[in-house]
Length: 304
Image (tube, rainbow, N blue to C red; front, side, top):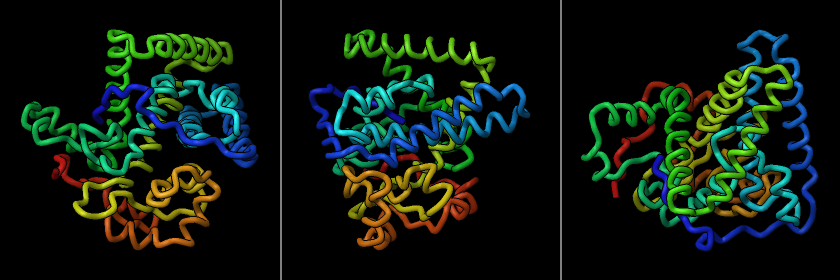
């Protein structure tokens, strides 16, 4: 993933809702409450169970932060930040994610490896100047297994390079300092609760992003002259975990809608037809696993 420096003044922040979205508040309370319970009792559970629980909650928290990046769940931006800004995933500051994600919502640049900060493609020039090992890594990242295993590492290294760049240039240096202080406090709290730092980082941080990358794996494709946002159908576990962001073509059409409004908007539109004619329509996440677990979803080099 290639991250570009984006001035905050260039970001058009989304409008906040007219009223409090209590269903989103409930999701936040449930996620944070369950996380606290897992951290407190994690040492009494089998390690695999603890890591899986942390990973699922990490992905859910990422979905919550996605809602916050779009101005939810209250009319008060300061309160939204209090509810969702904590960098529980340890590496990704919320302000950085928000600014890059809102840049990504410029549909004119979707999948462009230079302009779209969430693109998983490489330009021809980037490919030609890369070594054989890095090319292999990026090709592996185009499979679902590779995306889950090494995708978080690629994201983390890109984010850290971006943060180092912020410190060097002075771009939101105060935000980097606040992020570092918040991460320190989180680790102190985790330690006080009796959970090893590595366990929290591996489960909630790395595992949470790994599951999130399942959602984003096929949601955009470099499709010439067609819509580049896809749809993966899921009404229960995956839909709740990703807060309906799997209906991605509708989310890009109506980025201001809250997660619980997306389903009705999608069902009342031609979203499935648009996705099928463009980036793709997938009947379920198990179907996505079966098709792309070891097979590339697309070539890594962008066509444009």
